[in-house]
Image 1 (tube, rainbow over the protein chains, first blue to last red):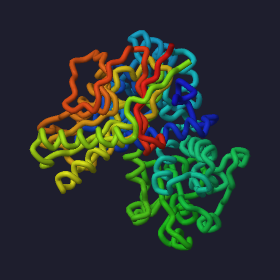
Image 2 (cartoon, rainbow over the protein chains, first blue to last red):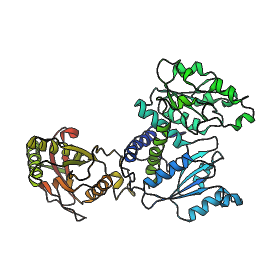
Image 3 (cartoon, rainbow over the protein chains, first blue to last red):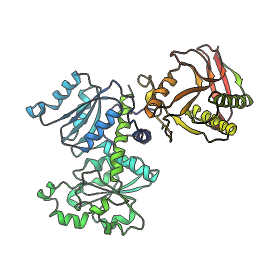
Image 4 (cartoon, chains in turn red, green):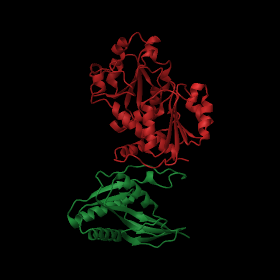
Length: 306
Length: 179
C-alpha cells in the first residue's frame, strides 16, 4: 500500500483508495497517542521544515507534535522576523531551505496555489497546511477521520458546512474529501458568503439553517472572520448569529442528535453558541486530537515512500 | 516449479503448541505474572493458542496482546511497497511482567529486534522470553529463542510457510523450494 502522490497539496482528485489508506493509518497512530511513550521511530533522520507564512497556532503545533512523535527533526519558521519581511520571494526562500538538505516541507501561505508552486520548485515532499481560500487538506482529513470514527463509515453520511464558504479552504477540502468517500455534503450561509456555482462541486446550497437541520447528521460550523463585517458581507455579528449562528434551540428541531464540528478557533456565541460547543454532541476537541493522528498518517505515508 | 513439503501437519501443530505451553509454565514455575504478546499477523494467533493452553494447564487467566512492529522496522524506507500499518493492541501494563513474545518463524532476527524496541517503548517487563514455532536459522543479529517448536535448517532459497486456520483455513507448516 502506498499513496499515489509524493505530495499532499489538496484533497481534490485524491482517490477513495488513498483517502482510505490515510484514514486507516491515522487510526493506528491514534493508538500510539494513547501510549505512555507517544513516540515512534519511522521518520528518524528525516528533516521537516514548517514554513508558516500566515499565523496559526493549532495547525502548527499539531504538525510539530506529529513530526516529533514520528522522530523527525523539525525546524519551524514564522514569516515575521524572517527574510520574508526583507522581501525574499517564496521561490528563493524554498530553494535556500532546500540547499540545507530538507526532506519534507509543510507550508501555510495566504496565496492559493503556494503549495503547488513550491512542489514544482523543490524536491522535498510538500504538504499543504492551508493555502489562501483554496485547500487545507489535513483539516479535511481530520474532519473525515472524526466523522468516520463516530459513525463507522462516511458512505451516505449527510454533512452540512455552515458559514463563510466563500473564503474557506476548510470547506473546499471537506467537500472534495467527503464527496469522494460517498458522503452527501451541503453548504449553508448568507448568499454573500456562498461562492457562485458551488453546486458544481456536487453540493446542495441552503440559505436557512432551519431547512437543512432536519436532514443532516453533522454540522461543520466555520469560523466567521470578524473583519468580514467591515467588508459588508453581512450587516452585523448579531444579525449573523440570529440567522446563521448554530444554537441549541435550532438543532433541537432535528429528530436525532446532530454532531457539531468546528475547525477552531471558535467565536463563541457568534457562529456557534457556547453551550452547544461544550455539549456532549460536540466533537470539537476530538477533532484536535485526531488532527495529530491524521497528520502523523500523512507524514508517515509520504516520508517513508521513497 | 516449486515443490512443497509438509514439515508440520495439523496434529503436529497442536502437539507442538501444547509442548511449548508446557515449557513456558515449566521454565517460569507456573503462570504467575506471565503475559503473552504476539507479533502481527500469525504470531498473534499463535500467542492466543499458547495462552489458552497455559490457562488450561494452570487454571489461571493469561493476558494476551498483539504487537504491530511496522513503525520499528529497519527496512521501512527503500521498499517498493509500504507495509500496511496496523494497531498494537496491548490493553494491559507490561511493566514488571514476564512477557512471552511470540512469532511464527525466527529467521534473520530483525523482526524480533524491532519488536523488542517497540516493547521497550510500551513499558519495562521484568523479563522478555521469545517463543517461536519455527527456527530456520540464518540469523543476522545476536538473537536466540527461549522456546522453539521445531528447528528447521534451511537454505536461503527455501521458504517457510506457516498456515493457521484463523486466516488460512488449515494448521500446517510447509517448506517450499525453488528448483
